[in-house]
Image 1 (tube, helix red, strand yellow):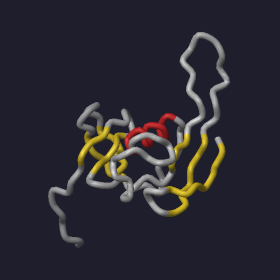
Image 2 (cartoon, one colour; image 1 turned 90 degrees about the vertical axis):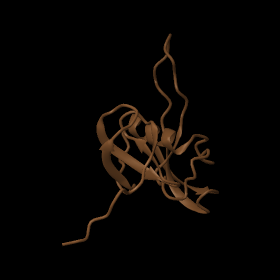
Image 3 (cartoon, rainbow, N blue to C red; image 1 turned 45 degrees about the horizontal axis):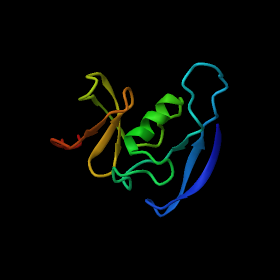
Image 4 (cartoon, rainbow, N blue to C red; image 1 turned 120 degrees about the horizontal axis):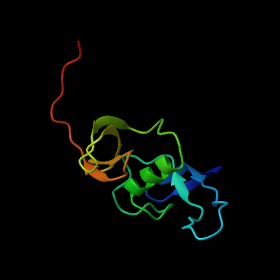
Length: 118
């Protein structure tokens, strides 16, 4: 994988991305091409297509997980995924949306209540 900085039109700034390696396998298997993986999905992501990776933010989270990339620096919370039912880290991004780090499914998130600090 190669690390790059690219200008993101949605964020209106440069962001860190990884370009995945093309698979080395050849034969009767489904092959993926290289993929752009944005390492800075977050509040500015609207749920529309990422201008860099041409996928929705939840698919970008799935790319991160599939390629073994760290979720460090992203806003996450631990919750039960409404799609796969597992207790997992959910990556939070714009518009009250989240993506499961296990199955990549999108979900809505909201804060039900807040507790005072001790």
